[in-house]
Image 1 (tube, rainbow, N blue to C red):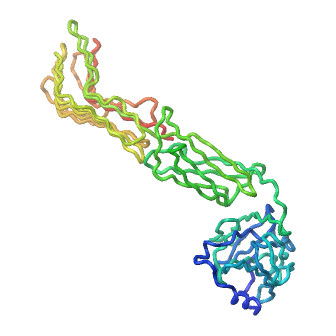
Image 2: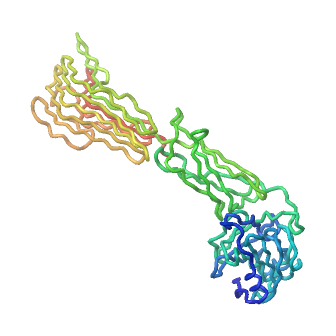
Image 3: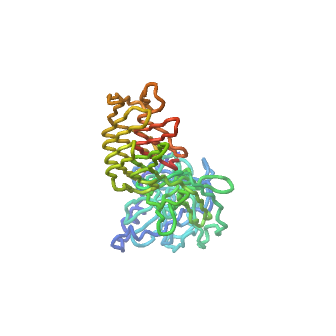
Length: 472
């Protein structure tokens, strides 16, 4: 049903518009009356749309066809009545609310108030009709100083309006004691379900969402504000949104900043405060806080020599850095490590974590190393760098070094886990050894050089580990 209405040409209404009082407030839009929908409170089935070429008007229907013919039309706010007829409007009521504000109710079947009467909000002023219209509907206007403005009802702006094919539901809290509205009744119970992201990363935006529905019929509830709180207490970060026609509200907490706990969780609360039509509801969730771990060290050795066993704990060692914030961990570099069969120079280790989203890079460097184990050829290493980087999307490892065995340069393949041929001698030498980190969403340990023998030798030069956790 399209609105068949010309702009009011009747002399009575034109005169009424021209005589509208000037706005009393300096910024009258800030003093807008609390307009309610012009029909009985809590009555379901009302929809609105607009296909007018000006801003301040919508068409309201209940049901389909002429189902709404004769239904009560109520004053949207208190004011003084001006009655009119004709000019394409049929029977109409205009209410002057003061401060330059007017509402108009067109195509009425009946006008149930007297011209000049004072009406309360919610008082019956007429019945819905089809005078000078093809089908029954209520043409509703809001004006300020005679000029159409965005229609506000029930505390929200309805503009931009849907077209006739995409009507939106409209509920009323017009439950005043003016004689036209129903008595207020128990608000309808609702359910609120959190549907947003399951994990968040400090330094990045957190997209939160929820669905508000009626508890009994599971119908979406439109046009209600839902508030979200990420975290709790002083660390809570909040945002709000209004539910759409599907009952969905979504908003973004910009640049999440939450503390990493032992269990890496962040409380999330979604809240609908309730109103005259719907009861309040709430949902909570435990979101995962994305975090990273990293560790790097220059050297570790276990060499069980018969008389003088050599044991070197990881050195220098960053230890494990576990964080959801940007941090750097790097002990002082070690100058020289000499232990009979092993000589290593200028060892450094460093782990750097970043946010937005979370990532971590661990790096170990060794300037030079010489290994001279009994029964094995001399092994020389220079310019060694082992690097491991992880985020929630990927892990990557790399190794750079120059290697000699028995004084002969060895060409190193880029393939992870490259095994160097030690001939017939017993022992295993692996370059760029890469191992996934257990229990991580993404993670990788990179050992630049790893030497083992059946006699218990276990020697690592240049080790870096990175991992990302609670990514989803």
